[in-house]
Length: 291
Image 1 (cartoon, rainbow, N blue to C red):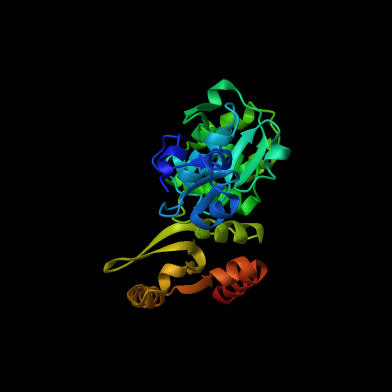
Image 2 (spheres, rainbow, N blue to C red; image 1 turned 90 degrees about the horizontal axis):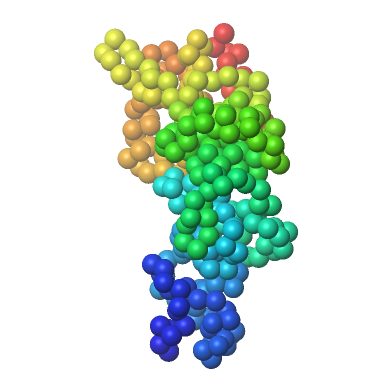
């Protein structure tokens, strides 16, 4: 079948609505088997790779003109890839309760001023500052802080601009965002590192991110989180550390840290996300042994 007659929406990948497909004789069963759903009501061909940007472009076809892409979706469009291909498109829109029932969308009530968004495709995209606010206001604290840390680390958002923004708005979630703002730190080099830091802070501990350790020969290592007086390092051991070469490098750097008198606590993804209280207890125990 020639799909070109079904694809009126000029984007980098072919996109079309269910209604357009049916109008050209494509049955629902054929849609389900021969095409890929991008979001509710929008499809593409089987050979197209689904990305978050493609999901945003699909959303722009079906959303009202005044809808505003925000949060992690806006950050991703601006070059900080916080949202993946399976994550919902985050959007401010009128009639958000109805929109939230649509596959592929996470919608909130649209309340914004004209200086908080710019044109994008056929709809709008939030400014970096507005997107960062929604990341903090609309998510659980550790998740919102970690994602906003990534925006700060990338230079997408200025901390002072974000503080001023929140001080002049009376939007839903502004107090929650202001509380989360107090824990922001753009030094973290990954989202899990930020989640780990916030987990420890919420447990009553105050580690310093990205501390460089030196000995008489020079640079030894930069650790994810450190309690410098106690010479305790806390490191996140993510999936990329499973690479044999990386494992060898990790062993070497941790051996050198121990030679410098440091203790290293390694936190895995399973521990961080499955037993955060246990992580805090382990770090507190290690600190107690260092004193």
